[in-house]
Image 1 (spheres, rainbow, N blue to C red):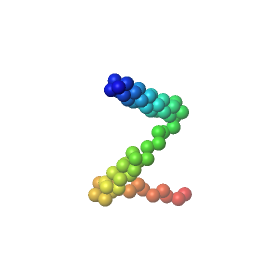
Image 2: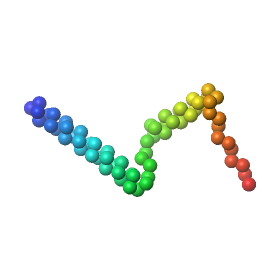
Image 3: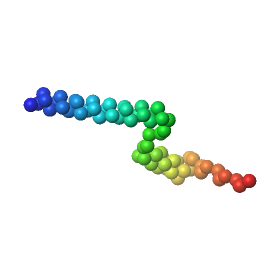
Image 4: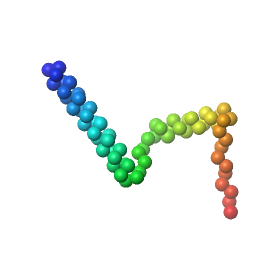
Length: 65
């Protein structure tokens, strides 16, 4: 029984990895970025903390023509 459960766990793990790889390859083929809300939020928090500490200035405002 334990052997069957381990085989099932390995099979499901491999299937999930193959799905993730297929998704990544599809996005790479299409040239679309992979949505990653958590990564964008982390980057925004990091930039906000740098601005708070005075280590990063705000981007310049666009000048109208």
